[in-house]
Each structure stands twice: as C-alpha cells, then as structure tokens.
Length: 250
Image (cartoon, rainbow, N blue to C red; front, side, top):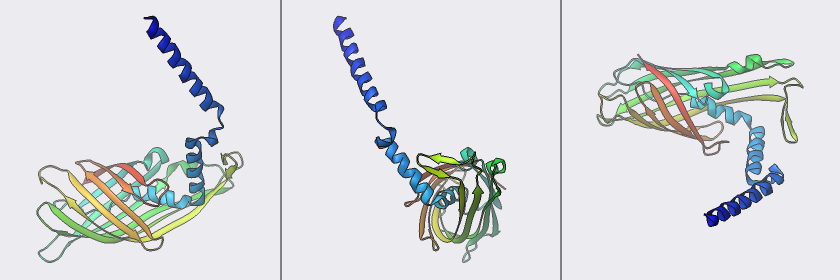
C-alpha cells in the first residue's frame, strides 16, 4: 500500500509540474496557440472563401430521385447552427429520363444570416446568398446513376461594426467584413442505391469553379429525411466540412 501511495504522489507531482510549465508559457508560443493565430490570419486574409464554403454546404445539386418530383432541403449544420444561416435548397425535376434523353433537374438555393439583423454599426449590414443550376442524369445500371451539370453560386457580405462591437484578435482588430465571392462551377458525380426499397443513397460529387480556380468535392449519404456527409475544399481554411441537412421529397 505504501508503494502505491508513493507512486501516486510522484505521479501527481510530475503532473502538477507539467501543468505549471504549460500555463506559465505565453499561450501564443504554444503549438496550439500558433495554430489558432495562423487560422485567424488566414481567415482575415480571405474571409469570403470561408463563408463561400459554408454557403456551398447548403447547396445540393445531386439528382432528384427517379420516383419523385422534387426535393426541399435545409442545412442544419454548419449553416443554421452555429451561424444562424437560414437556408433553403429546392430541386425540381423538369424531364424524366428516357431511352436516349437524360433526366433534367433545375436546382436553386437561397439563404439569409439571421444574426446580422442584430449587429449594431454605422451602416446597415448587407448579405446575399443564392445559387442556381441545372443537373443532367443518366442511369449507368439499375443501382448507379451518373450526373453532371453547371451552377452559379454567389455569397456577399458587407458589415461595418461600431467601436464597441469590433472584434479583437490579439494585436489585430476587425471592424469591417466586406466581400463578394461568385463562381461558375461545372460538376459531375454518381449516385448509388443498393436497394430501391431502402431510402439510402450514396452520393459522390466533384466540381471546379472557373473564376476562382476552386476545387470542391462531396461524399454524402442521403437517408429518408437526413443528409449526412462532408465537403472537401483542398485550399480552404478548413479542408473538411462535415454537414447535416434535413430534406423532404415530394
């Protein structure tokens, strides 16, 4: 028993020493602190790209299921929570797939950041978020469909904060966010549904934006009501963007 007590005492002593050495350091000199600063500087250098990626999380340009006429979709995370970014994505089937002709869908998305309505400043905040596109789909097998299309995406924000609402990040001070990011994307992908009686569809998609030379990819599992997946932006502030969305087929 005495050996156990001595061992625990020595362990607690070493642990307290390590904690003391960590807390005594300047936080900005730690690896975690440096990483946070790098992320903050990267965001300040190009905030539009970060918000454009969140905007893209709310989009859905995968095909409307063959037995449905359209889909309404709402991104829960990371758009509405934590950014209060209300959004609505609508897909409508224009033409069913024929022997030679593909299925054609029209899709669009619109959003509004609710928190900006409560921001105080010298200038009223302005925010714009929308996208529109067309999707062409052709069956490769009974289980797999190939699709592709083109879309236009746009997000812009103009906020001037009052002196009391300005954000401070170390030695940096942010009192204005003003950007507009828009791009024309071409995209392609596939959907795979192993059992037509089970509402579970795997979606794999990749796109390229001409204006900003931006690459984006998506892996998503679309269940009966929920979309669970991740978007990938190789040059984004965060490369991996997991998302959760609710959808309703009609």
